[in-house]
Image 1: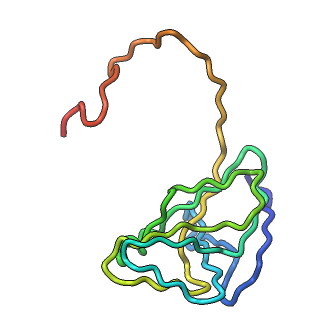
Image 2: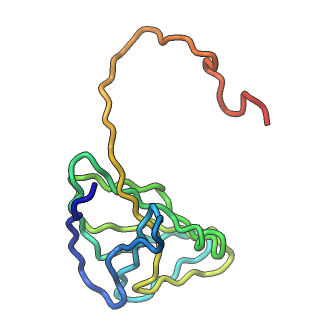
Length: 147
């Protein structure tokens, strides 16, 4: 997709357009848009707004994923990850954060909280069968191949 993606921003101090932080980054960092600081205590979760509203073209989705730095340093990750934003959704993008760390985590407006990836969507048509073709693996799963 080389055409511009339509975006509307409800501005809060410090909030920026999503942006790629390096030349070859797959995900764009997205920021918090909070009227006041949000404290997420250990074991708790919070829904954090971004102030972003997007119009994703049909045939694409946005995926919202955790930032690895927040995960390793603070034990902060996202629930429902990756979160999917469908092409027909027009509401604010919000992030479901959880604190798996030992300390309170403070979210301030403008903080980089997650990354967003725009990806093509493949839709299938189901064909119901009474039996499926055999495969070498069969029904083996959950560690069936060993360590």
